[in-house]
Image (cartoon, rainbow, N blue to C red; front, side, top):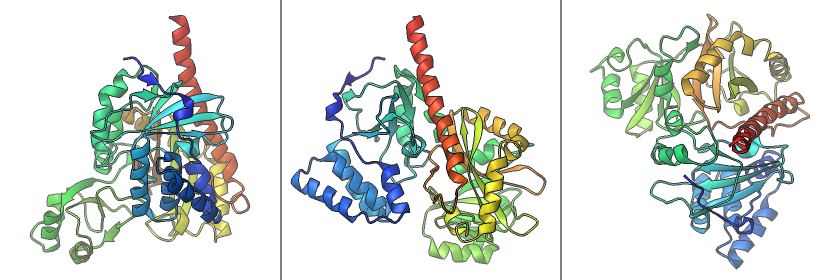
Length: 415
């Protein structure tokens, strides 16, 4: 396959982008001047794709997700290509295959490229919409579309495109990404000696209603599991509508408040540490090597960094600092075989995961995907240890892109 025709750089809308705007929101900077400027731009020129794009991002980042997606659709009508320049953009040219959606639809490349001089071009792909006739020239491509029920169709459609793409494609395995479903990942590591991935099944609502009424047993639907169980809608993230049901009555109450047709049901594993607290780590795997993104310590089994009290509790930040500093020699070394097993199973150059540890020392795998948020936005005053760790992670990611591009260039020269 040869590249489509090359588009002139001047024709590609250049945006402020995710990492820039997200940092402003994280720092509680007033975005109204920027928002008003962008709004004035689209009022003056409705074809101003870059302004539409950044407006959509600002709305999404401030919690106005539905409105943000509506504005994003207008941006897509204006352009399928967008450019985000890091530094002076002179180091490497990256073309990313992405898809419309919220902040968890795609690999957060804009965060991962912080501190670089990489030019990132975002090519938005949707089911039934042909690729643009022109694309920007690039040194390496990246398949950045995350796993979801919505994205499964576009990933399948990209299979022959990616297979024949004339530039190297990092994470260029659409089927492998599509396979990162909660139930698929759990089934893949069933029986693993190193990884505990709690049994997870997609179960229709009518079957769960039958379970709540006592017409079937839990073993009929989720063999080897026992109450309590975790229930969540398909494609939910960040704990949205995730609840622990202690018994059939609890399940009935859950279903009364959540009308979805199908749910993921997972066997609950009590992973509390001896002190009664719950610890969850986010780890990025880059070229098979693990890098720590954060450790969250919580009083609740459903651990989220922003609600775990990390900013309020100095002792938890101190623990995270020690954990991150010792990660390579301690946690990563202790679970090296588990990380290697996952990397071999997934066959991806980059992915991230949320993990913990079981009482018997196994790696407890909650979720793995290519689209988990990995960032360096935390306050350097409160979290002085974060920036060095994230710079290390980002540098490794960027080095991987350079290595893939250099390998391609050497092959071209040898030919």
